[in-house]
Length: 181
Image (cartoon, rainbow, N blue to C red):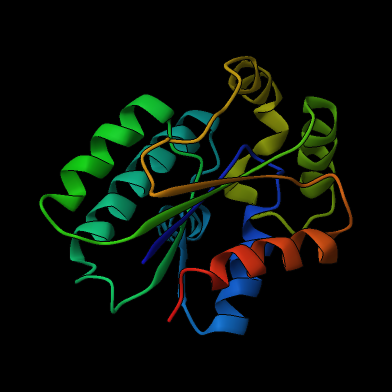
């Protein structure tokens, strides 16, 4: 099973992904983890570089999807894939492989997402390479596109993340367990 954990920045993807990985023992790979590895290696903190490394990281995630052998293996892939391009890339990565894909799309109101985005950066816990302080306009533009799921998976589970973290997590966990042996 491939669990696509999707949604706009600030929707709670990393929190949910890490908890699921820890509790269920499933490998969790995120776009941001890959980007941060590149940032550390390259030492660059420019907004344009961050965008390019984000695209490269997504390409690597699709390459990883190509390598998933089948339904006996499970992986959590976390990103905010472009709905059109992401669907094409996913189809290409899967080829003729038969594997269950479950997409969990996390979201919240634009106001909440913007607030979380800003708070995450200002907390000092966000890797400096993301340069989120220089990317508020990018977030505004992204949110104006009304982010949506890839709509390719066997099951698409949309979750509003404006409730308490634990309530949201338990809801997602329950859904994911429906697809595990």
